[in-house]
Length: 429
Image (cartoon, rainbow, N blue to C red; front, side):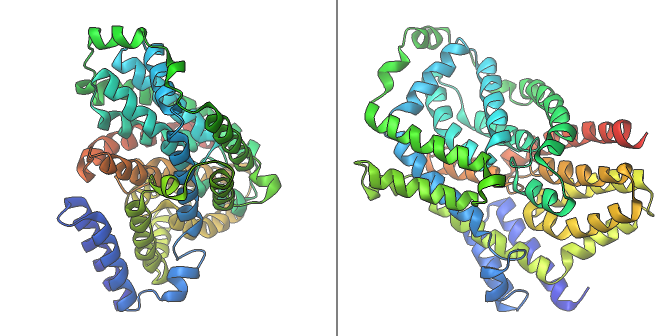
């Protein structure tokens, strides 16, 4: 690698260390690292702000902004209190049952929506129900973020890397359902069992609070019925547009911004109230992280790592597929999986063409599983993780890098470990 490439790696690792150790605020670390990357010309303004593959992913930024505004309006209706009481009553106040219910809802929604949108909607419910039952909220939020990443793996639209893979590999929505979704169901069953072990300290059952919850009428929590129906109408249209993306060809960011604009314009909600729930530090952190990772793409670091990993498999399909799964999981835990998949997909395309036959198609599924599930390994491995941590910090429930990561490493090791024999038995044996 060139001297500039090594320098960009050093800057990235230093910034990542500051984020992981929390010696400085994560936003300051990300912005500082991004600034240095631009200063040393590892990237430039054109690449950082306008490049589709190595710049800030404005689709992610504006998707988050639009959905945060919609959630801010919804919060004023009392619907999250309604859902919190409903969920607690369904679980009969039992903490583990409640966690399973919430992670199943999160994973299911993430298969149809962007996983970031899902956690934005489920997090307010989680805060309220945990407050009602006197439960620590952090374990529930961490579990939901991981469930959103697992559930999003199931479909073409569930996670942004899947869209890139589908475009490059000529894969359809049904291809993902057939090849990815069955295993995702298995992974969710296993994850529900893991939650029982990993978060056992959070399951403190309080009979009195549970009994009090059962006496509540969730319908009384709705504070503004008119605003609720207006908000649900807009949210339904937004979600429908997300699902119909292959037909409508509107980017999710455009849909979210249009929905937010319509909701604010058509209701009595003031602009100040609408943007109060926007997590500005989270948006800025993402921008800095995108610039840093983009610099690694620009200097060829990610591509060289990917090529070296593929070369090490000696062209054998079974070794290539399993090696690709593992390398994708590791790298997606460290860098954002969107630029990683954008860089890796042309290499996989060439390998698939060279291998020929249906057996070579397994490489696409290995890449998708590794990139999507690897995002669970660390606090910055996936967009949903960062958003959840930002929401928690805003509500004075800080989740540290290592608090998330110590659970994430276990979940990633188990889920990726289960995918390996699935790929082998279904495609390679």
